[in-house]
Length: 373
Ligand code: AMP
Ligand code: MG
Image 1 (cartoon, protein in one colour):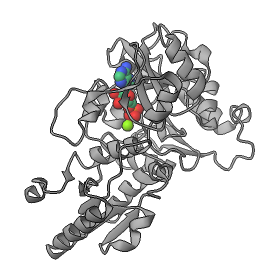
Image 2 (image 1 turned 90 degrees about the vertical axis):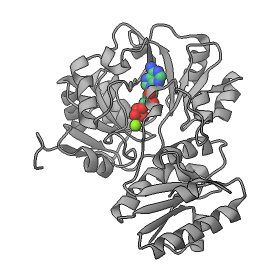
Image 3 (image 1 turned 180 degrees about the horizontal axis):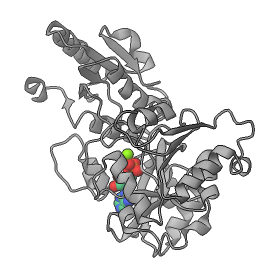
Image 4 (image 1 turned 180 degrees about the vertical axis):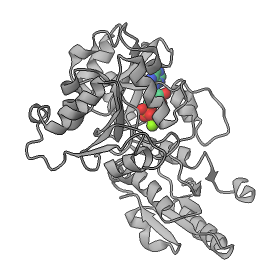
């Protein structure tokens, strides 16, 4: 690739016959990828949420390369990925009983815990905070890479900063080809949105970022759970400083300008409003896209109408959302109108990502924002 330092290796793993972790650890591609990790280089790998960009979490030099490759602001800390609980030694300092309970119930899985930082994690990873975010991913390729390298891996999503997170190796290569040593290709990821980040350093756990594990599920395990007030304020004109540094940045944005249309007046009002906005913009000559669900597909006439999944089953929506945001770019969409979802269960993660993708722009009944566009 022109202007880049090297060609990124594309190691295809998803057609391996035996996908158990024990077998994958010995796989030549995983062994090669682990060698790059141990040379302080970067390797992208699949997890059950999105593709991660991995580096040795115990090495400053390696972790710094993540920020460089992604164009990530240095005050946005990384999540440390482990394969077994013994790896927490030196990574975290103290594990409160509540955190232990969450680890036992939710790991491996899409839950990240913020805990007191251990002595071995480098400062680059935690962006100089006294806490560290850690999780055990539920994907055999991720676990095999961590085991083969013998290192906890610092890994944010493997996209250029600000872009939608990658849910396939092709997305990773689109953003990072020539900037990283290689990508382990495990096919499409399953959950599709990032992990839920929960601060467990205080008595009552607090959700800092909604994700694959829902608030309702957490409450069943540990009782009361709070949500960072900065998240509750999403879409409203309230400026709270979020407790998770990464939450303040624009994320997941497609190239086209995107608006959400509110659901407060019901599904029918929302869909009619979108149809009206699409008509107006097409008359002005814009290439217009609509983000809808399987149920809504037949109701729109626009240049690009894409379904994110089934409104009745939000796990299909989390799975496809980033792919669909990238697809609008592929089709050269200039303006995108998106349907919205109730903030319950996985709807909290879906709406969080849509809000960020739209830069917080929501069109509501009697909304001033309509005249602002
Ligand atoms: P990413 O890996 O790109 O999906 O982002 C990781 C998320 O975890 C960001 O929102 C970070 O701000 C958050 N995070 C990582 N470490 C910490 C920490 N020590 N305290 C609070 N939030 C954290
Ligand atoms: Mg990210």
